[in-house]
Length: 149
Image 1 (cartoon, rainbow, N blue to C red):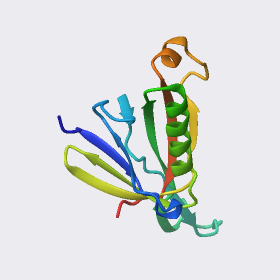
Image 2: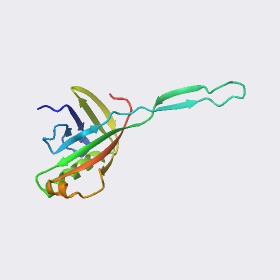
Image 3: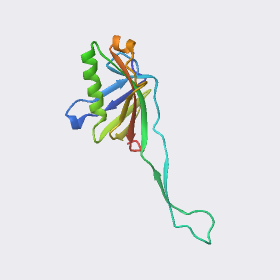
Image 4: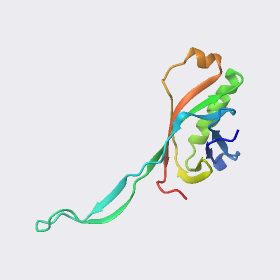
């Protein structure tokens, strides 16, 4: 079955092939149910100096502020050591100074310029079931240039 959603992270700076995170759960990395958000939009406004004689404020420029791509990802493997290796690979991909992140949902792709991300376990606990099943869940926030290319 084809993935409904996919997130691809380029690893050019690491001299490695792209890291792919699918939505169907058949690979090492997959997007947890409800774990892919949209890149938000926040304006950054520049105003002229306030005037004593003019009401309101005069905007001189409005652009988009840097945004974030939110993800919840499950990493799974066949053993504890393989899981540790997979988690380290994901961490290295997200720790690059700059990289491209392509988000594809139902065949529609958008590519953003990504920057070093934050990655935390979803509940900050070593869960017995996840240890036994050789998997770990992460909440990831990837800072991105706010306009897709």
